[in-house]
Length: 305
Image: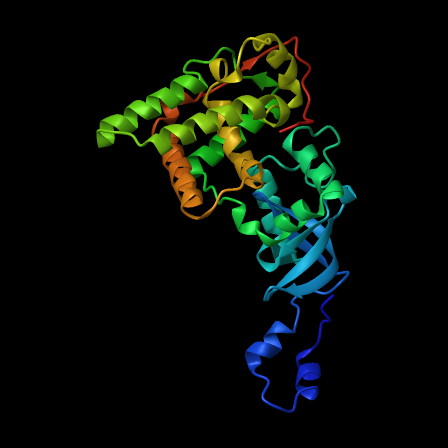
């Protein structure tokens, strides 16, 4: 573990030609036991620094997320951290409100399945996977959702968790229709469409079908899902833009473990942002302005998403 030193300690121990840059390297901006805020996907979580080390010319911090199981402990780099101040607490609260994270911000998701649970198991049983997560945080794709679509997410959260309303299914257009409309739009705009674009859109549709039942539904939508999607029906044939937009909140987390490198990652990010701009331009056509009350579904503010 790298030892943390003050600037005076460094100067006392070096009467030779140690430069200011070398001094900065040996001073950790955070201390063991310090309470901090840490980014995980789009939100901030309270955490405690348990260990510190300087490796590969950068500081790394081993965190325990307060209120979460130890399986979520991880090594992070400095870009993921913020000081635990009143100003940053307000940033955390604003992000929680924006992404509907208020209820889950301080407690573990006991029933989380799919990729999250798999990540926890890998951290316990595979140190190589754990190391990869620690030293390659830049694989977390930065997906900037346009402001009007962020408001759509907030309205979606309010309708379902506070007003007890649901999206009426099946939706028209459904997710498959939306992707087809995007293909036609790109084809008309450029005269051709690259194979990579089509492959990315197919991948997003596949992500949606797999992620919807495990991480894109609120609890009071689950009965509706069971009725709307029996074994031979895929969600992309039934659900529409409201649920598709939720995918892009979770997508950085889903892509975190994908082995995506260099130009491929840049192209993926560009195509996702272009698709989000397309959703924004067609917001009135694709999204509902109000949801409906389904009396036989229990209203609950506890959510999976």
